[in-house]
Amino acid sequence: MIKNFKDLPSSTKKRLIQLRQMLLSYDEEKITSKKISELSGWKDSLIRHDLFLLKITKGVSNGYFCKDLIQQINLAESEQKNCCIVGLGRLGAALLDENLVINSQFTIKAGFDSNLNRVEILRSNFPLYPANEMQFVIKKENIEYAILTVSDKDAQQNAKRLADCGIKGIVNMTNKILSLPKEIRVENLSILNSLQLLL
Amino acid sequence: MIKNFKDLPSSTKKRLIQLRQMLLSYDEEKITSKKISELSGWKDSLIRHDLFLLKITKGVSNGYFCKDLIQQINLAESEQKNCCIVGLGRLGAALLDENLVINSQFTIKAGFDSNLNRVEILRSNFPLYPANEMQFVIKKENIEYAILTVSDKDAQQNAKRLADCGIKGIVNMTNKILSLPKEIRVENLSILNSLQLLL
DNA sequence: ATTTGTGAACAGTTTCACAGCG
DNA sequence: CGCTGTGAAACTGTTCACAAAT
Image (cartoon, rainbow over all chains, first blue to last red):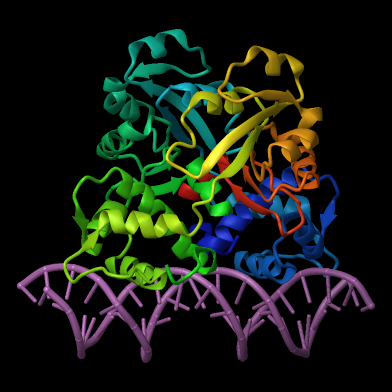
């Protein structure tokens, strides 16, 4: 591992993460850039270029070993990271028992909702807390990332709160654009937005 | 409206769609590129450039009229479009009563699941069907877009099926990369992927 | 004075072309 | 031969600088 994953161009990073996911359920021993291209729709030359940037140590002239690729992509950022779910409405609750984060470097450590009732009736593999304990729990559990599943109208307020707790990044599932200090990374996953992009 | 929205650079399109969403709940009469920048994190020059490409007819030298912007962004593709939800597990079910698609050009016309039981017990504002009626319903209801919320292992199979029904675009909420003919648009909304991109 | 509108400069990303390897 | 590895070329997207508008 020569190159640091973080320093790769972000479009390359994105593809490599997806490629890794893809290979986890690909059951041949080796794969060629042409085959990856068929499966993903990316140009074969682009894939080779990505792997070139990653400085894959040895991808013979007859395809790559899947195991190799997965390992190389993994390694850059394999350290375990903790995250939480903020907002336990229908959508947030749906994420509680899905094995959302399986095969990954993330552990979900907490769920939060401002409605005490939700916190008490829902079941999950990790503890649920009322929103006013956010600051405390995030510190205690060393949580660095959050999935924001509150309603649109509560989005900004909760994002701000997470920012104040020192969170590093947010997966924003609301339709709102968040106003946050720019050192905080945000990935927007609005379904409505995505539908509109399909047009 | 001089320029066709579809023909704008895709990054510009993306921002304009988000901008529109943002303005819907912004309650001043006018807004400047500087203010938009504060709210969104995009450079003010970038916003002006985007609006320049959209050929906003009249954005005085003292800010834009919000109403104007919303309208201009709207108009390009204001035609009503139909979509459906495929997979009514926890995640899919969570989308049934959210006002997911409010304030938009989309109408949800159907939900599908291969498990008859799910189809029968769930309640929603639109009809739910067993998956084997997909072909028929998609034709009948003139559905062009789909939100895919099945399990990872069923993702490719269902995507293929949607493709065969002539769907135009898919919002893919699974962690799998879909292999589809490239005329079918796909937006990937994997939560796990997004978390990994935050690193 | 402040803010838009706009082309030109700059940065990032993808594709191409082809040498070298197995 | 088919495949990777790699720099260069082509393309796309973003930022800058500044004239024009009020």
